[in-house]
Image (cartoon, rainbow, N blue to C red; front, side):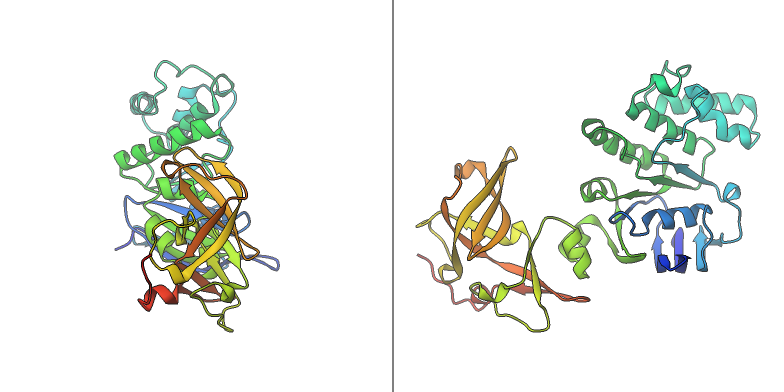
Length: 354
C-alpha cells in the first residue's frame, strides 16, 4: 500500500485551475520532488496535503487514512517554508522546541529531543543564537529541525533551497537527502530546478498547468518523456520546426516540431574517421562555453542552431570552425503527443565506414 495518495483532486481559484484532477501515490520513506515552472500548481498540491488548502473535490490519504476532514495540526505533517519562517526573537533552541511545546510534550523530552536535533543538523554550541546571527544555510537547518521535532509522519518542503547561495545550496542538497534517509520520513519537496530534483529525489512528479504530467525516477523521466511538455522542460534541448531538411529524417504532418537534445548529436572534425557518412551534415561552430571537462557548443546546421557538447580531451574548438554533425535521433511533438524518431539512414543499416 502506498503511503501518500491523491485521488482526482481538484482546486480552483476563480477561473484558475490550480489542481486539475491530480492523482498520484508515493511509498513510505520516499523522498519525492514536485518539479515544474512557476505557477504550475506545485505548492498548491503541497498545501492541500498539509491541510492549508481545501480541495474542491477528490480525496487525500496518508498511511491509508483519508485526511480531507482532518485539521492541519492533527495530520502529523512537518512543513519547511521557503523563507524559513523562524521566530526572530526565539533562539535556535526555542525555535526547534516550539512545535513540541504546542503539543504539550514533557519538558525533559523536549530538552532531550532538541539537543539531539541540534547535534543532527550540525549546530552544536549555537543553541542560544538568534536567527539573525546565523547564515542562510544554518537558518534552513534550524527550520528543518523545527519541522521534524514533533516526529511528524510526513515532511513537506516548499522550495527549501531557493533563498540560499549556490555553493551552500549544493552542500545542503546532499545533507538533506542523507538526513531524511537516516530519519526514514516520507518527504516531498517543491522545486523548479531540475538539477536539484534529479540530485535529491527518488521520485519526480512533473507538474504543469495543475496536472501531474509524468512521474517516475529521475532517470526514467529524463530518458522516456511521455508528453511534449516534459520533453521540453527536462534537460537542455533545441526546438526545430524544419526537421525534414536534415539527412535521415522525413517531415511528418502530424508532428510540426521536433526536440533535439545535446546527447542526440555527435560532432566530428572534417575527415575524421566515422560511420554513417551518408547522415553527416556540415556545421559551423557559433558559440562555445567552457564547462571544465567539456564545452557547451552551439552549432549551426543549414541555418538551425543545435546545442551539444564537446569533450575537451578531443582538443579545443574555435568559433566559426567547420565541423561535421551527426543527428542520431529526435523527439517529434505536437500539442499532445511525442514520439521518438531515430535517424532512418542509421536504423536502415545502410551506413558506410570511411
